[in-house]
Each structure stands twice: as structure tokens, then as C-alpha cells.
Amino acid sequence: MNWDWTFAIHTVMPRLLSGIITTIEVTILAFLLAVLLGLPLMLLRVGKNRSISVIVGEIVEFLRSTPLLVQIFFLFYLLPEVGITLPPFATGVLAIGVYYAALCSEVFRAGFEAVPRGQWEACTALNLGRYRTMRDVIIPQMLPPIVPSLGNYLIVIFKETPLLSFVAVAEMMQAAKLIGAEFYRFSEAITLTGLLFLILSLICAALVRWVEFIVNRRIYR
Image 1 (cartoon, rainbow, N blue to C red):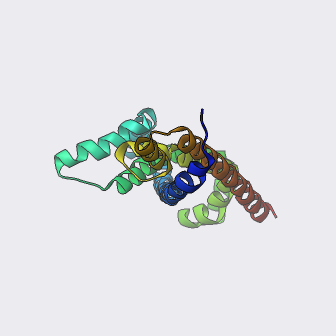
Image 2 (cartoon, one colour; image 1 turned 30 degrees about the vertical axis):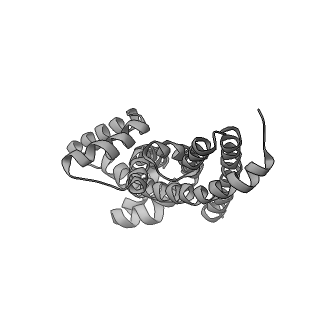
Image 3 (cartoon, rainbow, N blue to C red; image 1 turned 120 degrees about the vertical axis):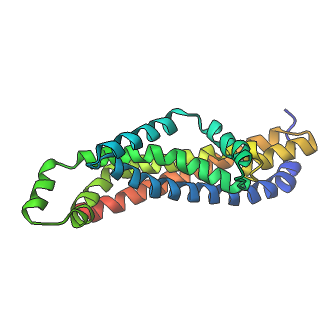
């Protein structure tokens, strides 16, 4: 492998750094979508309406059991056939967000079911409504156990963003592929892309541990 530092620093890095912005934007937006959709999915699945619970459960299982890349291709290539056309960026955010919403709903469900039954009985004895029970008692006790899992999904979403290069989203992997195709040199672009993913993943993992510490301190103080 003939490594060219001048090419790596002056040609590859500036173009990869521009792709980092798109990668981070996709990661944040997809994660927020996953969390915001995952919580309602969990509430519907554990609700008292048996029909809705079964339907939501089947939807979650379908999303979890289908490869993410297939879902990206479905949104990008098949939706236009029924008159719905989404830009590549929006397609990527929607596909990743919905896919991980199903996974996050299972994390929320595990946290929900881990709350002792006695907490519900105490809230009933105090005549608290379901909304106040969820807001003030159940959700605060759900958070500490699920923060590590949600943080792990955030990191995984970040590492899944290269899949969007298949639909021409201008993230880091797409930038690396374009550099390789333009200059017929892939070693610098791919290697630096991998290093940037590693560095940012480690930073993200440290932030997740910090959030976990803050949540535990506030809930259990």
C-alpha cells in the first residue's frame, strides 16, 4: 500500500470533514425519531387494548426482522412508484429512525416491565391518575436501566450511516467512495474514514457514560 500523506491531509481530510456534518445530522435526527416513535409504540404494545397491542407487536417484529438496507431501498426506490418521492437525506433519516424505533420500543418495554408492580399499586392507593403515575413514578424509574441500551443504539445508528451511501447521501463513506473513484486511490480515504468513525464512536460512548452518571445521580440522590 503506497500511502501518500500529502494526498491524505490536503485532499482526503477536507472532503471527509464535510461528510462528517451530514453523518452527525443523520445520526441525531434518526435517534430522536427512534426515541420519539419508540415510546408510543411501547405504550400501545403494553396497553389494555388487546387488538392494538397485537398489531403493534407484529409491526415491531416485522421492522426488527427486516434488514435495514432493504428498508432503505424500499423507501428510496419503491415509494416513488406510488407517487411518494423523498430526498436521499430524508429517506435515510426516516429509514434508520423507524427501524430503530422498533428496537427502542423493546428497550422501553423492558424498562417499563422492570418497575415493581408495587409502584403501580401505591399510585392507585394514592389516587394518582395514569398520566401522573407515568410521569412522576414509572418513567423516572425506567430511565436508569435503559440509558445504556439507548446510548448503545445511538452509537450503532452512527455506525449504520454508511449504508446511506447506497442512496447517494453525502456522508463520510459516500465522500470516501467518490474520492476513490475520482483519484483511483482508496487506501487513504477508507482508512481515514474508519479512523474518524472510531474516534467519534469513542467520544459518543464517553458522552453516553456521562449521561448515565447524571441520570443515576438525579434519580437516586
